Image (cartoon, rainbow, N blue to C red):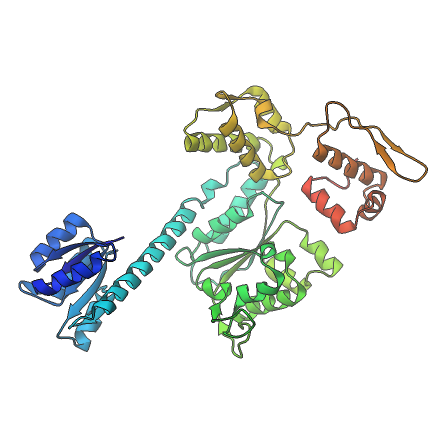
Length: 465
């Protein structure tokens, strides 16, 4: 539990408080005056101090001021039989978390202690994760010197340099799956003027369709069956900070209208509410799809698309980053070797394989591949085989079609790589269809959307011969 310091000159009351708190599992020290309190505070580093306002050798407010100067993160609750509004206001101003009136109600005391400790731990947890995110989100984390990466970092630097007096633009981040869109969004937040505010990330594709509106805009109690209490939405939770809407292309037309309104008017209406709330939130949006094509197909609103891409950042796929691939591999290998406390290095053939592979999963696939290789490699040298990457070519598989149209496939003894086979089938169909995705989908018996998904999955250029 927690270490607590009780500063109380009435010995019987101090022992009563200690007994009550020790029953809850806390470790409790007692100081009878200001001098002893300061000594124990430095020696024991308590999480919480229960501090009497009037002490034999000093004023509790002065002791509060001194303790907070020594360690501001410690929670302090004032206790007094001589309460006044002025004392209460001054105690809160100096950093006290609460104010208890004597004679103390022990149940109230225990409840107050539990509440304040819970709040403090949640706050410490939030600060830890925010600090962790901030440490891992600066421009140096975006590794590479190829031209597309240099251009991306230059734009990011420009956006981060905008001062707090400037209304932040809406930013659209595009790129294939695994290219690092989340890292770019976090870097922009923690490198910009809103770094002290919250950064909230939500994957729009991961929220059930019937809950998306409630998650984003909140709801009132009783707004729907499971709404047993009111809840603020993510737009409000990100007040004075940033909201990152990943996979925004997955949202339906009705939600697109509401998001457009929230961005343009800076107001949101909770589900079941009659009033609107003003919000001050910077919006980052990301997608691995082609929003321009979705606009042309009518599945994404044109006005929202242009509103989102006020500042458009495109992250290049890993296969287009040349020598950056090996630079990233070396960075990941060093990090993973330190994490697992294992000495590992890449052989020349492994480095050649990494350079030649197309990395359809991009940076995420590269890191996961090296993670697996570092963990399971039997020796310090990680060779091409240890990487476990798919073969660069498909096995030769005879296909025969009988009179009824059924296919007969013979699997070779050495087996096949299904991903490579699927990629070759799609590439062959596109070549036969001269790049027409509609015709290629028909040749394969797929819907156009299904074919487009597979083209993106395998990073196939539809126009390649």
